Length: 253
Ligand code: NI
Image 1 (spheres, rainbow, N blue to C red):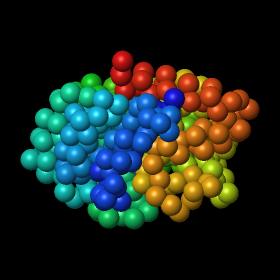
Image 2: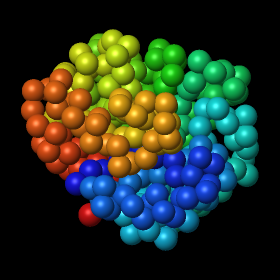
Image 3: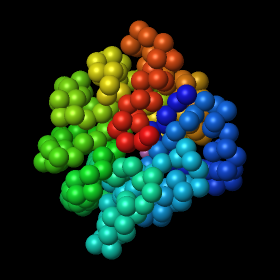
Image 4: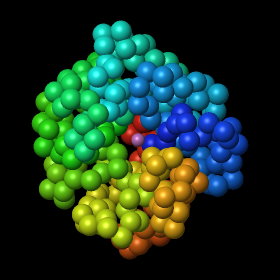
């Protein structure tokens, strides 16, 4: 069975058939999902999915794209949503210097405020870092009491080594199956077995052979297959260790 540690079933791509897609995940071998949030609206939706479906858990937080929307009021709503049943992390939070939808200084401040909140609540964080490795690491180092995962990891091998030393986890998406994935195989081969997680980031990043299509958690097997190939092990073994790691990381069960 697979644990999808990062999905977005609140996304409008699932508007027409969300119930059917979620209901089909069990027969596709998916037994756990964490729905990651991007703003207040999606944080509320993630919590409602967690309340409705036994196998879905929620992360709540403001994505760097929406950092400009973080106010005292929205931060306090995140704090109160975080105390709800089955909310297991703050996320996704971080920095995105590829799109720069919010100004960089605003993104950094939102990231810091939510790291602070995670520290106060004793919750792990899910970090989104796109083209912002140096600044992301600076903020991570400033909060040594906070543990987390870099989702859709895209940093260097050196950065991976530092994160592992700090007690962090690394998570990989369908991007590891893309032909142009250059750094990822080295990092996938390096990550200690007890720090590895997998995720779809659906509806985005569908793995090969479905690249470009709408993604869902049922496609985790393609990601596990590729990681197994890189690490010289079986897909079943990757499914099993990433299940154990996800449960430990999010304190599930
Ligand atoms: Ni995401």
